[in-house]
Image 1 (cartoon, rainbow, N blue to C red):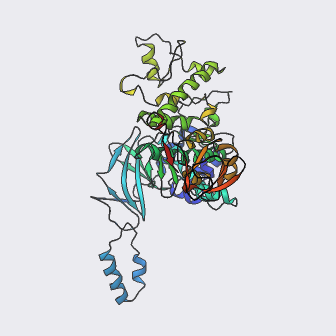
Image 2 (cartoon, rainbow, N blue to C red; image 1 turned 120 degrees about the vertical axis):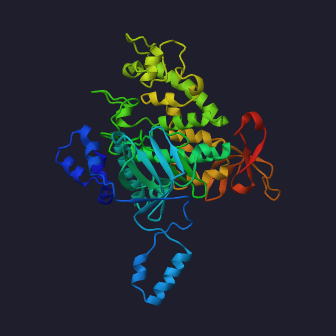
Length: 484
């Protein structure tokens, strides 16, 4: 599927793809020439940059047109207000130069204001990979925005809480070399890896599971680099925002996926339908996020990673996919370099040659506990780490009061498949007939009640008077009760 052709006319203009689309429709563009043609069409003077020490509190755009149409007296008053409350000029990107971060593949200005938007500017050196990232992000951003008005009200409501930043402009910039600046909306919320506690991380992670379940169902989406730095969570609005789509793939029609043709990690084979080519490994993204969180020693994620590694080793050992397993064997060659050195040169982080091999066994030193080994695992999905199954486990270790937001607009799937079974709930209210008694949770009821089964009676109980066993940190709090 050529995702470029699925973009709106507005997006096509913003990304300067008009002439390229014409050529694609006329079958005149060879695949290896797409990025070159885009780069040729990108302007260098469409947006002026202005550098500041800090952004003003008010980043709204000045409305000069309104002043011109008013009387002189009113105009003077408006100018006075503007002077007292400075605004920014349209068409200019205001950049705080000192707020710049460097990543593996791009640099990012993290404090930018453009046309009333809080934004970031990502500078890409290699447009070959950048093209696929830009189009994927723009496509998903537009799709999610459209889904907010879907005729299916539950679906529309769910996608109000799943976000992908829109791209505001592209610009060709000559620094030490020719680069492409991609300005996009700034994601709201906090990086999952920066949340202040294990509980906060787990609650955010539960919402990520829900978001991924929907994106996989509707778009065959894989992020494929879902570290805790590439997904944001806004606790106030319960929103999940995905960023950094350089490794991503999407296959909404379940035909030909849209993805970077670089096959360093996600190899494709002629005549063989693979999880990489179809973009359908449903466990890889959550496994990556879990392993990344485990690196920060968050206990629940550490335990999940250990279980994941054991299960994935069994899956690989039992797999009949010779073509995929061969990629995990040490390469042979005549050079003086060791087999391990040759493997690392080709970005291979696991070797399965010996019977007692372990995942990530080629990573040593400071990299030993990195999650990089998962980049080689796209052909080995593990069902226990599909979003719905992981979510069932994480629900058991977060307060039930948090379940309601996750269940919202997803009731059928949540009640039938995801909600943990057999959860024991204790009522603590001296005025309640079942005070200090334990019942079994049957389901959530309305917005803030639980339906509990006692010996011969089913009752609806406000969640505020209910308690369940807290197993977030088993070693420290195995006997404690957690207020929900």
